Amino acid sequence: MKTAAIVLAAGAGTRMKSKKPKVAHEMMGKPLVKWVIDAAAAAGMDKIVTVVGHGREQVEPLVADCTQVVVQPERRGTADAVGVCRDAFAGFDGSLLVLSGDCPLITPQTMEALLAMRAESNAAVVVLTMQPDDPTGYGRIIRDEGGAVLRIVEQKDASPEEAAVTECNSGVYCFDARALFDALGKVGSDNRQGEFYLTDVLEICRRAGRAVLALPARDDTECLGVNSRTQLAEATKIAQRRINEAHMAAGVTMLDPDQVWIGPDVAIEPDVELMPQVFLFGHTAVGEDSVIGPNTRLTDTVVGCSCVVDETVAVHAQIDDHATCGPRAYLRPGAHLCVGAKAGTHVEIKKSTIGPGSKVPHLSYVGDTDMGAGVNMGAGSITCNYDGKHKFPTVIGDNVFVGSSTMLVAPVTVGDGAVIGAGSVIARDVSPDALALTRPDQKEFEGWARKKREEFAKEG
Ligand code: UD1
Ligand code: CA
Image 1 (cartoon, helix red, strand yellow):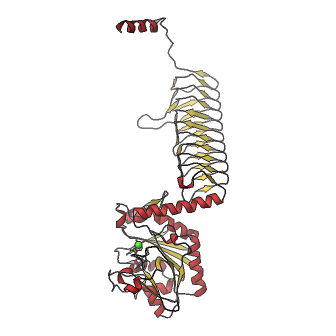
Image 2 (cartoon, rainbow, N blue to C red; image 1 turned 90 degrees about the vertical axis):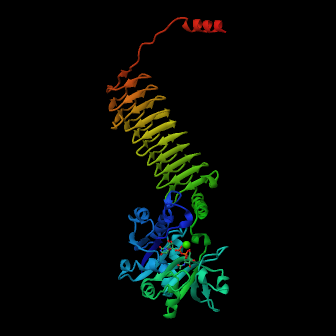
Image 3 (cartoon, rainbow, N blue to C red; image 1 turned 60 degrees about the vertical axis):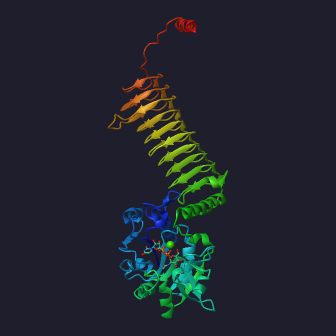
């Protein structure tokens, strides 16, 4: 059977008190709506459509590469939000999940369970239900004495007996697509909010003689909606625990899992050790036996095996096997530490390759540089790659020794095996195996310091 999903993301989310639409807020580096879309993609959808409206210019760029986008011109209710997708699903015959862009914790497994239940029963709809501690604000699932689902009543429209029901609508459904779009035409807005309720589709389908089923969530936290900053923090905590537990089960050590934040798209091999205050975001990957942290943030960074990455910030960087980094290193986009290389303390590297076994141990800036193997960059040495307008490249050959506090004024090339004297300003190319230094002669004034001290002493 064909399967598809609609992700509702047109609402404003006023309780966030934000200039950003709610679904664009991030949980561990990833927008809420993307969590939902990626979970749907993992459940194997043939098609995913995102409904945008409020703040669409901010939401659309987040989802346009991975879903079809449909605009809901006016927020007239959840049935209207699904209704604007009618053309996108013309001729579609299969199961259609309806998901909320503000429910980021929903899992592919739950989507698969909904799809399976509908496929087996040929129901018009299966709704995912939950039993929240506080059901205020949620739609209530009304069943008959036999337990069959009759309808969903919104809190605002509920009688006191209905409001006393504890089973609630999670806002996640699996529909027979044809039955859904047939029924949508019959949904009215005669209710307390004057909105077109998607929930009315259940009763319409049941009256048309179709089965309407409910699947209680195996874990209610999956249904947590993010409407406020407090709920955003709660959802983040749940996601953090869920992700960390999966990594620990797969062989990753964490000194304190409460102090480790790992995004959903991060890959970590067994026997990696994560110290406190570690943030791994985006498509970061860490190879086995590496130790990361403490105080480290890696975004879209690939770390090899047996690396030590201590107090480091890295963005779009690559750290190969046996390389070491930090404490207090900053690897900017395009930084590449080759096998066994080192970026040490207070070292910043941008768009540069540090060749195999090469070391940049202390207080350096290396930018736009292609460094060979076995190089030692002395303390405080930097590349001067920028003239205020343009960037220029530096090339450093194999086994070069750069003395401390050297300025390499780009564009410049230092040949293999060359040695540069400490304190030099190298503005011209250096031949292989040469010694280059720019250093004024040292002067000495005998006894000068002692005389000065004696003068000071007389002054008292
Ligand atoms: C909805 C359900 C309620 C359920 C709850 C679960 C209805 C009528 N009620 O209520 O039974 O318990 O979700 O969280 O469906 N949206 C649009 N366009 C609109 C209206 C809403 O895209 O015109 C989107 C919102 O951005 C949100 C989702 O649909 O992602 C749910 O809408 P919301 O207004 O939050 O519905 P609730 O009142 O919470
Ligand atoms: Ca809601």
